[in-house]
Amino acid sequence: MIVCLAVVGHENNPLYIQSFTESDDALKLHHIVHCSLDVIDERVNNPKKSSPTINEAFLGLLYPTENYKVYGYLTNTKVKFILVTTDLDIRDADVRNVSLLFFRKFHAAYVDAVSNPFHIPGKKITSKTFRERVSSIVKSFGLSSAS
Image 1: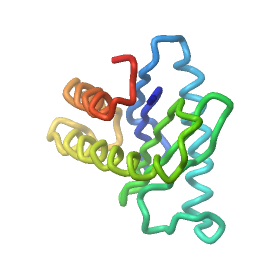
Image 2: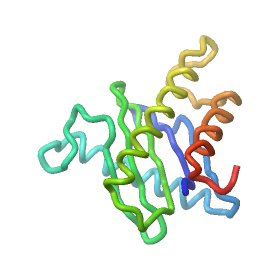
Image 3: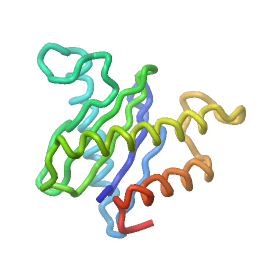
Image 4: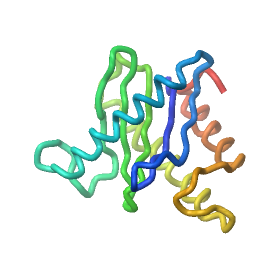
């Protein structure tokens, strides 16, 4: 189940964070997203030490916590997509195929949102249409219990 989805700009500025939990975990999820930026920077700057190649957008499992697993995706413009899930017992090989498809759909929604002539590049994404489209993508994957 997806509990949080974030878009972080190339200068590590948060552009969009959406939580899919009904509990008060928002601050904890923001902290997890923030911590994952160090892992992404390490993988991008030291490609020999990690398994994904520099040309591969899907970064895979960034790190697991006690309750969550964090996955990453890096666009060609260095914008980072971070996915936080509670699925701790799923094999990474299974997650890779589903996550890659999910991130590609999410990337398409992101491109549509930032292509809006009224969106200011580098600023937070406040589009209601984007938020609804993200919720729809999450629901279509059956990965969230909350809306």
